Length: 119
Image 1 (tube, rainbow, N blue to C red):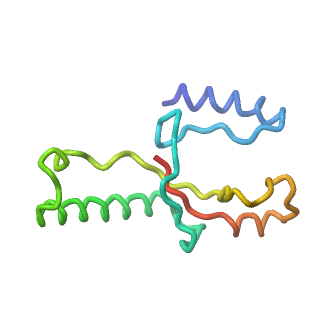
Image 2: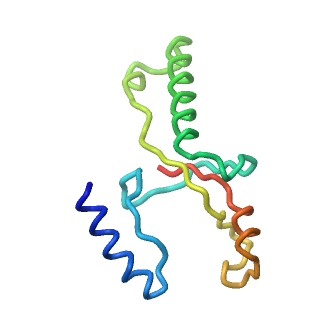
């Protein structure tokens, strides 16, 4: 992990020089991630690791309750909850123009962000 952090720190300096954003290690290590859930009415300045822990607890409780009520098949009972992360980002809606066309200040842009679940 130390080598990865050192490598990303050295690359990110050069990446930002050519107008790149940040380069970081994602918690959910995958090349093709997708966002199946968005939480538009959740406070977007919340501590995301605590929300991930609470959501993982809720999903495991729901899985145990479904197993108790015999709603799971025998092959679904052994499936673990997949790895996921939460991130705060502006949603991409098909009817909106690109972000380059918008003239919002940074405070307004941050308040428009919503929390998204990423797998």
